[in-house]
Length: 306
Ligand SMILES: *[C@@H]1O[C@H](CO)[C@@H](O)[C@H](O)[C@H]1NC(C)=O
Ligand SMILES: *[C@@H]1O[C@H](CO)[C@@H](O)[C@H](O)[C@H]1NC(C)=O
Ligand SMILES: *[C@@H]1O[C@H](CO)[C@@H](O)[C@H](O)[C@H]1NC(C)=O
Ligand SMILES: *[C@@H]1O[C@H](CO)[C@@H](O)[C@H](O)[C@H]1NC(C)=O
Ligand SMILES: *[C@@H]1O[C@H](CO)[C@@H](O)[C@H](O)[C@H]1NC(C)=O
Ligand SMILES: *[C@@H]1O[C@H](CO)[C@@H](O)[C@H](O)[C@H]1NC(C)=O
Image (cartoon, rainbow, N blue to C red; front, side, top):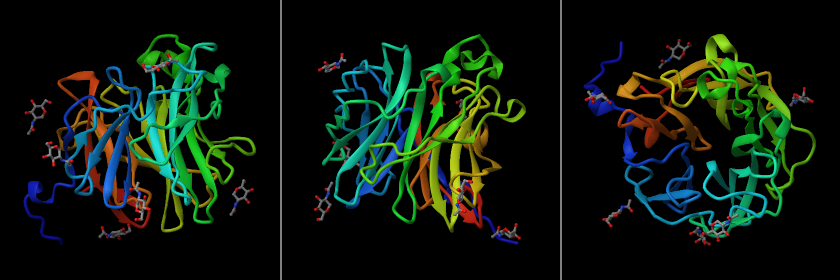
């Protein structure tokens, strides 16, 4: 049996490392500097924070990585950004913003040579799927053969009907989709494939916040279940041998009560799966979600933070 020393000495979860509203965080490392990005707050469409010690301590830049959301979108409803870097050095910011013509969010991409931005939006979104409730929570993935993809959520939660997150207790589908891209990381090619959806008994009204990595040859999909303002919100994962699925649910990584957290979710792991950023509620306020970090331990395809 392993001898465990005090929990604090071994604590793999730290935070809040950004003690402010910084929801749905993403993280990228560039030349020894780490950058984190989050959902809009105040007048900033895409928040940015910088760390010079591999993610231990962070400072908000106070700048907006996406001052121009694109001519199709409105300011101030820019959710769950994600950033990847192409081999030519270009950074791609994936984001969701509201399209006022169809009253839903659409997912889109913007580019910059500087990870702090400003990012320049593409002229059109990647996909809207308005009849399904729009699209949100986009994240980039590059497979081992170099092929680029995004995953995102079709936001059935926006279709209304009461219940948690206004999703009529899960009446509307919230499928997580996989979309292959051209090598530019910007242009969709082929049709999106559904890789997961909510199961009411396990997920409540929804699944969301997908992020895909590959670890030891297995595709690992991180996601959150339940409504973000519900104690059931959590960080889960599912695994597959084929990127298109089927994905097998592997359960929760962090849930309410673990490490004294409330409604943890919106996680983004580094591509190697060693570390992740996520948010949890602070001040007993669902609309104040601070950033935390966790060091991940892998045993085959089993993930833990202990
Ligand atoms: C990272 O380092 C490379 C090589 O020194 C340099 O060309 C590049 O501009 C740097 N990128 C950033 C974002 O600082
Ligand atoms: C954050 O800002 C403080 C005060 O300006 C500075 O001392 C510290 O080095 C900064 N930390 C990071 C991680 O940039
Ligand atoms: C968003 O805000 C920026 C900065 O204030 C402004 O330049 C831009 O025109 C606004 N975009 C829209 C669509 O309102
Ligand atoms: C993955 O699944 C897709 C869809 O079923 C199939 O076309 C493809 O050949 C599979 N890829 C591998 C490597 O098995
Ligand atoms: C756990 O969180 C609650 C409320 O967020 C707080 O009052 C309490 O002090 C925390 N306990 C520990 C051990 O940090
Ligand atoms: C890893 O998982 C295997 C199979 O479930 C188990 O037998 C083994 O004890 C685990 N190793 C550790 C270090 O937890």
